[in-house]
Every structure is written in structure tokens, then in C-alpha cells.
Length: 283
Image (cartoon, rainbow, N blue to C red; front, side, top):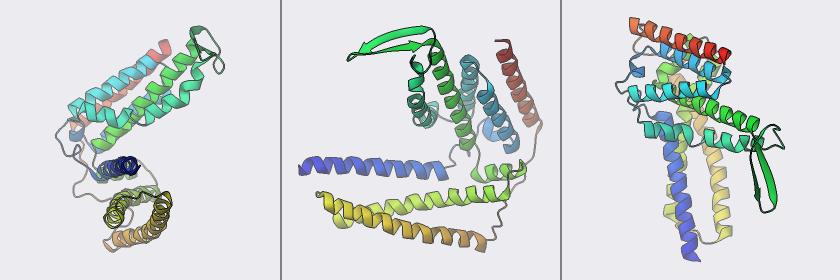
């Protein structure tokens, strides 16, 4: 019984530490943004506008094939930008697209989406019929979600955090929104580090918890302690930013400088979007 409880505790520990490590890496890592690649070499303003144009195109198109072309272009851009495809696919296909499949699953059946039957089955006395409109709608939804998430992740991976905030202000995003995002970005890393330290401290003092009541009391105490510390930390982070001259406006050591390559890329991106819209209108 103790061995089973110990194995379960090890599994929970590994899962928790892995999630915290992923959160810290996602919020503070600029490894790919500092690499030499195609998207990294573009002006952040033009890069953001072009990828947003692709995103709006993916949301507006009603053909899974055309959206799939955008997804293929996204993978090509990831390769040209020195982003490992395997790691990129893990980031983009592991959570949100899989969750979207669970959401859209009921629409596959005739009870929700009537139409031409594609396949019928019977499991444990329960029969079901998949319809063509349901399958087509589900494929379109999942491909659209996967492409949209991939474009957003690609932008965040290949753009420095400070540059992205500056672009948001250039595009007219309100200052209060940019300030909130900036605070959350800095706070999430500190919060993940604090939770990791608390977990390590509890483990070093308590060890393996074999009784349910003891584990519940430890979790309850840590929730209350974490709440108090995070409230205090949020105030300290904000005061530290103010003391260093932060006014809500992102500042960079270098100014944005558009090159002919940036204009050519933006023109090509708009042509691709227009061509996909035209193809979708014909189809």
C-alpha cells in the first residue's frame, strides 16, 4: 500500500514539476527568437501584421483544404526560422486542438447534425451514425483551430517579448492592456518559481505523505500560504517596475527599421491571403 502511494506521489511530483518547467520556459525563453532565421530577420511590425493576416484568413475561410495550405505554410516558416518541427508540433497540437476534437465530437453524429450518412456502427447495443456534414464541419473546425494556434505560437516563438509589446502599442492596442500583459508575463515566471520552491520545501520537511488526512492538511495550508505570498508578490513586482522607471510604455534599445525585404514579405503575404480568399469564393 505504501509502495503504491509512493509511486502515485512520484507521478504527481513529476507531472507538477514538468508543468512548472513548461510554464517557466514558455514565459521567459527567447531561445528561438535569438536564432538566425527568416522570421527573426523581419521587422517585428511587418511580421506581426503578416501573421495576423494569415490568422484572419484562416478564421474566415470555409474550406479545410485551403486552411490546410496555410497550415503547411506555417510549418515551412517554422523550418525557415530554425524552429524544430517536432517541438513546434508538440506545442501546437498537444493541448488546444486535441481539446477542440473533444468539443466537436458530438457534432459528428446524426442526432446533432443530420445529413447524408457516412458510417454507422453499434457498440454495446448503442447505434450511431456519422453524417457527412458532421464530419466536414468537425474537420474544418479542428484544422482551423490547429492553424490559428500554430500561427500565434510561431509569432511568439520568433519574436522577443519586449518587441511584441512594442508592436502592440504601434498597432494601437490600449496602454492598459499592454501594461496588464507585461505584468502577467513577469509575474507568471516568479509565481511558477515560487510554487516550485514551496513544493521542494514541503517535500524536504515532510517526505512521502501516506495518510489522506495529512495530505489534505498540507495542501490546504499551501493554498492559503501561496495566496498570501502571491498577493504580496504582485505588489512588489509592480513597485519594482515603477521604481525602475516603467510607465506602461515598452522601451527598446534599438528602434524598428523597415527594410525592402520586409515590404516584399508583407506584399507576398497579402497576395497569398487574397489568393486563398479568391479560391474559397470560387469553391
